[in-house]
Length: 600
Image (cartoon, rainbow, N blue to C red; front, side, top):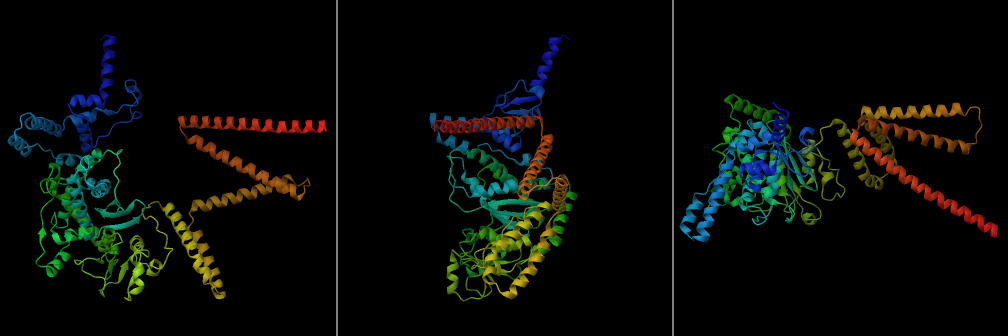
């Protein structure tokens, strides 16, 4: 073959490896919104310009978006593309019959026979094993919980049917979590409340935000968020159906209409509360055992295709069920009976949903301000009340009921420590509560660091109380405790820290010896020795810093090293310019002073 023909073949191969977004949209005959939705469902993301090898970069620009050839093949063989095309065709017909011909009967028939698409086959492709789906529940749950709190506004892109489905799925998951005693950790932050559960020996963390009035910003594109949530809703339905089936629970669970309008909606599925409502209000009580309203084809009942998510073989399902039983019998024994034989009354100011989840999953009971609650405020069975001092805590002085009055941090700390802590540290009268640190730390070295910080902060908070109640006998005990505390601090120190301290001490001793040997013959006064010692110490410190900088430079890449050298040059130029101005100013002062003397 001729050389020119070979070059053309090489060009074709290079061009075929990567595609721009416009070229893919033209080949698939799709709109940009449909293409974006399809990429979200399939889990395909664009490539960065740096990820493309140097051979193929000549054709492309940095500002454009690129996809690989394998991504294009995955999208081209997708069934949903045909459904998108049918939807566009039906919309054209609907506009024609409504606006031009004004035929209402045909418009109604078109609405009835409107094409619908399903995401069942995509979830089966992406998650062939059930455990893979549980690994991606973190993002799905946090997104669904956040979307359920938004106000429905279809002009912006927040769909009403998705908001209602998100609320229902959130309550279904919370009902499963506290029934099976799965919650392990909790943490209060500025964003909201983080909770962690263990499902199939895998950790699932999600965020429940604080209650607030949402502000819809125009800069945010909510249509993209709705596409993600459309996918997450289908995924959660598959997962929940499988989990309920493994524990011999019916999905969707029966919901009482009386408890449906309560703040604690996840308790509307509880069998014990439903039986209490039947006894107290027999005429008003009814059940709603229907599924979520199928307003969209994605929100189909999970009974149709959910068993096929992890259905590779019957042996695998049996193995997963055995793992779940193992978790329930052995691992959850510590937290399962943490709040056993304890009844907590939660006031209206408190986060009812989160506190009730933790208490119920740890074996406790809950009461709140409602006629449908099992325990009322004046009940003698209540052992603890959860409230804060600035809210309803001011009314406690008027009451004379013997029970423990606790702040909400008490429950989170008990759960993280896996033991019941003393209530005196968390009472309503206490202003300086113990430090609330995050339990989501897995590195052992960082754990020791956190323990030290917790120890020091708690010590500073309790210093004022100790100073007020000081006595002569207490001082001796305090010294003894202080010695033990120092020992604890030394014990908490890691081996690396101890080795660093030893090295620093040895270096200082060597420097002092060198100074003494050099100045044996020469007599130097005391003031000069002090200044020389300080100067030498500074020089040693600067040398150490230079050595550290050179070590870090070696670890850097070429680009970063060049950038660092440029920064150093710029800093040197600035210093040189500043020194020039300072020297000029000094010279002017000297010349001015000499001229004045000459005149005089």
